[in-house]
Amino acid sequence: MSALTSLARARAFETGRAMPIATRRHVFLSDRPLVFVPLSLAGEANVPLACLVGASVESRTLLIVPQPRNRDLRFAFAASLASVVLDYVESFTGSMETVRDKNVFTDAPQLLVANPAGVAFTRLLGRSTRLRRTEGEYAVDPSVPLLGRWLTHFAERTEHPGSSSMLALTSVMAAHWATGQSALEDANLAALMGWIAPWDGLTGPEAALEAEDPVRWPPAGPTTDPGFDNEVLAPLVRAYDAAASSDGAAALARALAKLESALRSQMEPTWQLMWQAVSLLRALDPGPSVERRWAEERREFSEGMEYWRGGGLPQARLDNAVAAARRLSTLERELDTYTVDLAFDDGLQMAEFRVSGEAFAGTVIESDPHRLVQGATKRVLHPLITVRTGDPVRLEVSTTLKAASRPSQEATIVSVSAGEEGIDVKLELAKGMGGGHVAKPGAVPVVSESLCYSTLRTDAGQWPTFPKREETPWMHGGPPAEYVPTNEDAVEAWS
Image 1 (cartoon, rainbow, N blue to C red):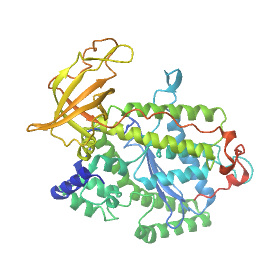
Image 2 (cartoon, rainbow, N blue to C red):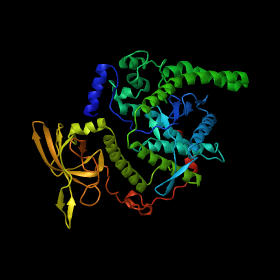
Image 3 (spheres, one colour):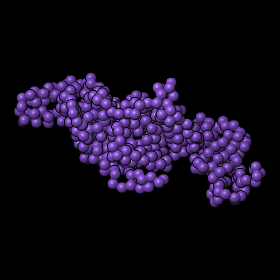
Image 4 (cartoon, rainbow, N blue to C red):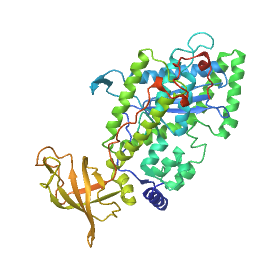
């Protein structure tokens, strides 16, 4: 936890209300996200029990598995979920545009879950369905494997820093507001929202305490409350089993209705909280880099749709050595880029680097926009500016910096001097000024302009070189065999 976030938590505890730690929204929010509230059977790894799913607060579909230990009922649930999810995904394939000589859809689907446990449930449900057979023994509906591919796609995108294809709302809200409780307690959506937007005139601590009542605020899932399991769910499932074995249609319908009502009561509060969280996030203006990252999500979606429409295989259970190394490298680079994006987009995020001495903010007090220096073959434009700051400057002379407002321009520290009115930092500028001996209008900062310079860089450098798949070194198993789904894949466990 950073120093400023710790300070914000202390301030939230003192005031009884969550404190903002971001001035911009750093995730993309679709105009029509698909909200998914799953429940799983207690004591069983990832066995689905029920879910609420829908693309608007008023319109949601309730799906249940009345006897979760019945394999046929589980896959009937998966087929019903596939009908909702696949229709939603297909609704984004109506129009395309050309981006860098490649056709991509103009929008992409977005899946919202309450917490990271919902992401884990989605990942395992995708893994358990994408390799199922649609013919022969234990055949499933043809839509089930495709559902698994898309659920896996959503879950895998959550590993990419800055991705918005699938969001866990407790994580997103905690990244924008600091509460006066622990990070573990922030994982409870009701408690977290109680600090951010207390209800009934309560303070944050009072609302968070009330959120511990599983009767009013059932867990956001996928795990259910043990009291509900023992006192409500178990008798209702036994009643369903009895009705199913009696061949009485009326009795079976009554048992199903009671199960649906009980399970809906466990998910409805979470459903409302999730849409409330979406409304709070929509009130924040998105950061400038959000749209660029969403363009990458649209590209990934477009490529996935094209691949599977062309008969491509489902995702393998494990990456080969080269693919795993390339993936790890990509995630590391994306994390570096995302960290810079946050700081350049948001003054509160950049403040963390100002506190640590990696950045400073100040006002230009001198500017020499016409300064020329002798280069290797000709005189080159290198303006000088002096920035006065009240921040601590712990950077060495010759350090190269960038300003959030001028990411394409480089500034090199020439000197640092302390005075009574602050610290004066003299900077030599390069790049981003146009050609010739005169800078283009607005390229060189002017006196009285406010700037923030940091060591953060937007360029990630050169990509590392990886061997081709067929050149995988022997110490990593040598060239892997082509992946072909097998019968063993098709009987993969739900967990």
